[in-house]
Length: 362
Image (tube, rainbow, N blue to C red; front, side, top):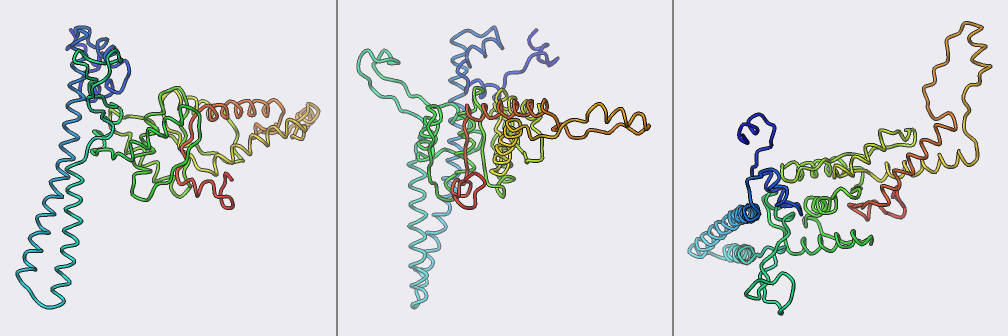
């Protein structure tokens, strides 16, 4: 019966993608048993453990393939150095040999680091004092890992480096505690391709809004990077763009989009100009409502005169011309601002975004 239901697409077939998604959930075993009532508690736990073991083996195999490529490069460097030593020669040959030795040293150190690399988010088993929580019968705490980082490594075909894992844990801890944090990273350390997607994955749990603010020239690149990171089925996450300017209205569609970004666990990508335009729009609405200096709607006498003169009714194309409309826009803007205040903002290139003279958000 279940096979027939899956063939009719009434039930979702359980594959590696679904098992990887359940592995990242705190209720993964319960949800798996709900999808397949024939599984017992031990069977569901065994399925989750087997999925984790498979992802570990696959990602380690990918990393081993990279190590093999480095070993081949070391072999070619050794062959080249041997040929240069056999050829002999004058000062030019000695310079080539010195350069080959330096290259050999770099490649050998890279291979040594690759072979000695350990998965940073995996805690090895250790012996704990009696009475501690999670201790087995032999008094040893079993190994543990973060399944979200494991699935991210599997989907990206890479292994997180220890500094990246340490920084991600530090930033996530600060975000959950409501503390603002700033960290400097050099080019090539995975700031946009690893750190930002991992933060969006770990923080965007459906309870708060995750907004990533990048300079305008990097908007397209950041959008493509996030889409690429969250295109795999286990990590599927929407990536939406927040665009706004001061001539635009704060519509109910805009507010619904931001609210949907929270429930759908989406990443809201924006620029400093759009954020500043929205804040200035909110200040403008509050100022107009406070001072009463807003355009009025056409009065009834003017409309009657147009009807007497058989003129066409004037078309109102701007919905910001009366007090009621301004109040509605202000209420929507305040609600959207509250979503921002209760959420988390990830600012890339913070030295550019918050530049004291050139920034849109200074």
